[in-house]
Length: 292
Length: 280
Image 1 (cartoon, helix red, strand yellow):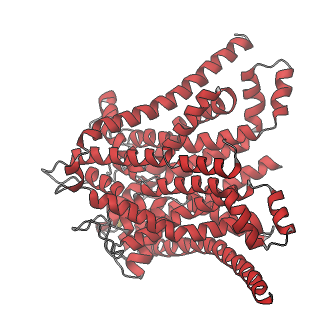
Image 2 (cartoon, each protein chain N blue to C red):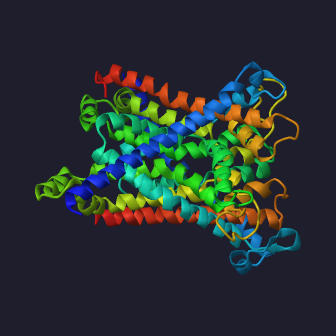
Image 3 (cartoon, chains in turn red, orange):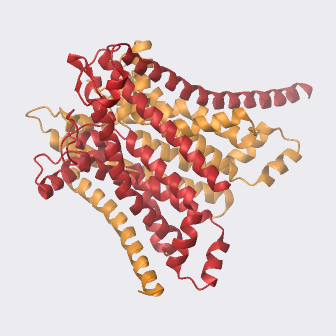
């Protein structure tokens, strides 16, 4: 049956080519995202000043003022609050899951973490808007309750599943002998976790935190709903302000494609893109440090 | 304080953290469901402000996005797991997948807007939304496929190849069926995430919904449930019962997520049982 035999080899070849093509397509996608968003964003500086964009907080596109510092600070600030609260809590959850939780507790907490990851970000925003903003308003006497604190708290909850799952995986992948050696020397469980397991898992924990940061800084809908959307520099944690993402959502619809204002919004998304690519490089470095 | 006491204290704190995380989730679910469930009646879906159109669009866009992303995601995952040699190209593909996985969804949204709305001049369409959403699914699909295939023991492949099967026959008849439970779980997770995505769709599929129900025209604008919730909360129409619709929509979204997480995990367990005789 020479014919069918050729067919078998032919389809084997074709399958391989299709797989390679798919893999290469993935690279093409990310490259074209960088190219298109980058081109559109950098076009901003044909009319606006690069230095002003990064150092001024005067955002008044009608008057030709394109200072995006407010949004950059807003994004970094909410992300910082998110990792400040969500990082330690997530790590505690991961240590608990990996080393302390009895089976029944693990059986509850695993799916619970997955569910956290599955809740749509608008729903987080909706809860933030109806509950957290209100709590902050009553708790602090702020007039609206909107601001970086509300955004940060919502984000802290949203990054929990990322931090928990990656940290837990790392803690689990450590050789049992580390733990056994430490316990055999008479260390308590906590001493073992604190002095042996966490340092050994450090690269993975760092990776978890970085990916948590990446998730927080790019998050859009939830933040947009609780940040207050005022283009004013955040004078405190509980004053309405804006982030890069929230401002894109607010203004994209009102600006004609190709205008400097519109390009400036693409420039903001380019900043987000570059930050997330930088974070990936950091993750790779952390992982490599761990292997060395 | 001696080491034993510290140990007990730390253990206590870790238990408290774990309970706090679970309590937070339960509170989330109870809060949303208790506010929204009372509004989920027939009128909520098919009344004058009904969300049946949005509900349909959500699944329609999800379906189309999976049609676009599944072949590429599976193909790339298979390549990385089964074929990829250790070289620069493989490195680049891995780096691309990881980068794609951290690209914020709003950046995908803007990219989709440049391509579909402006360059191709289609305007806001279900097609553009689904194609852009497919980009969000891709990296997760690649990772899930690669992991599931790597979990298949090498001896399976060796046995099949030793019998004279080609790589493709081995994949199709041995490796993929064995990896199926993992793939199904992964695709379910991807689908659940895509169902709730908003930032991408605002800029590509738009915020309008067709007047007649179950409009399958992919060139029409298609607002999904998640986008609808955002629209209701960000600029509610005066005089309408937007808040109640928002409460109901949030509850409906949560129910969809719960169904995806709980019910669709079952077929994968069942498949695993059928295929391996083991119940993990």
